[in-house]
Structure formats: structure tokens, C-alpha cells
Length: 121
Length: 109
Image 1: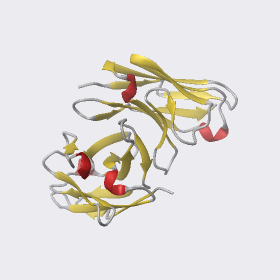
Image 2: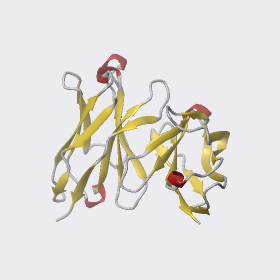
Image 3: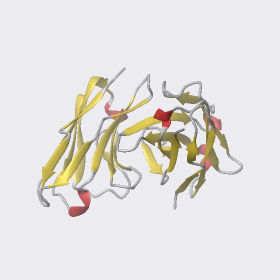
């Protein structure tokens, strides 16, 4: 059974940093393309960024609102995905989900339960 | 930048009725790159349809997707009580890579 478990959310002040983790199991993590998607309270879904599998190049890609501030990385030896968030803004307040990307088609098939990040002074 | 517009914003129907949800793109989208998700309160989204018309694993056949170019549709043939939720369409493009529509709330009439 595929499982994605996010952790690391919490309250942080504007300008601060936070690192989210997503522990994966039930599939071959090293071959998976992974993504982060967020959802502000009461709002819709917003894609944050993506990382390819290392065999496919390991390239990262980010949405414009977070580019230069957020960094996605992976540790295939630990089956874990990370999201390093720096220079946080109040508008980054959201539930952050990690998800897998279906091989060969850009849809998000498995999702974690999400972790809440609140940016507030 | 492509924009996905979902309509209606809210759809009020009764169990047993047919639901038709629309997703319109401002620029043409490859059918291979259009997906639909269901989200219930307090839960993560669930993939329903990808490639515009391919049901994801475990999705009942009362859910179907169709469309091409700029107009896509999610149809739920006979609504079950568990189908009342928010539905999002999503497209893959060049920049940004992945775009979601603003959602359609399907509520019980």
C-alpha cells in the first residue's frame, strides 16, 4: 500500500524558514517523480514544485510564487522528499501535500494527508 | 499562461441525479494532460480521471471524463451520497507546469 506521510509543519514568523518532510513507502521511491501541492485555508489547490527521479535527471521545477525561496530535494536512501522553505511570507500559509506523479502522464495519483504551515507574527 | 475556469462554482443536485462539471482552458490543452480530482472536507485530493478520460485505479465507472482542446467535462452518471465534494480540474503546461481550476462544489440539494 502506497503511503505518504508529511511532517514538519508549524507556526513560523514572516521571514523565517521551515523544512517539510514526506516519508514514502509502498512503492519504488527512487523511480518516482514527486511534487508538492499546497492549499491555503478555504482556497483551492496550488502547485508548488516538482522533482524528477534521479534516473530521469533529478531536475526540479517551481511555481513562480515560490521560485528562489523554496527548494525541493530527495533522499532516495531514506525514501524521503523534502521541501525547504525560506523567506516565508504570510501568503505561504497553507496545508502542504506531497504527491506522486503518474509515470508518463502529469497527474498526481497518491497524496499524503498534508501538513499545515502557518506564517504569522 | 493558461487559465482553467470551472463552472458552475456550486452545483446543487440530489442523490441519483446526473452531474455535469465543466472545465474550460484559455488555451488549448492536450487531452493527455487533463486530470480531475475530488476533495472532501479535511481530506487530501483524490485522483479521479487522467488523460481526460482514463479512470484512476479504484474509481467507480459512474465517473467519466471527456473533452478536448479547451473544453473538458466530468460527468457523474448517478450521484451517490459520498460524491458530494469539491472537484478540481488540472492541466499540465509549460509555465507554470501544473495549473488547477478554482473548483466546483457539488452539494446536496
